Length: 177
Image (cartoon, rainbow, N blue to C red):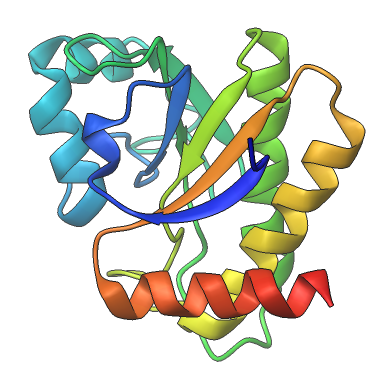
């Protein structure tokens, strides 16, 4: 079994331990992957998100951090919510914050016994993170986690669109060589 792989799939249909949600700071349903995950999980997911304490008005999960909830109507035990940085040209620490999203999600996965985990292309939708750079960060952080976290068996980088899948595959091949 390949421990790190790229798939073109609907992340809401994966029967694994946990999926990662490309969330917003309020942990309220949004568009894209976030909206699809909330729709598939059912209203219990929103109720669970609303139970997470606000750190300041409208912020339950700051960019670069992660929170965990049950999967409810999804075929997973957990949803790990993380907030990518909004792309502002790359000179405002965006790469560090995006890498922190992955590290925070992997840390929560470890705390909850998650052995199989799937990520969407964090930050590449409405937050505008350039796909090529985001794909490299995703692959690097996933490889690092697989090398250092003994509980982790497999990580899937999942794309719904073929162009995102292609870029993730290029990053995976470049990192292997």
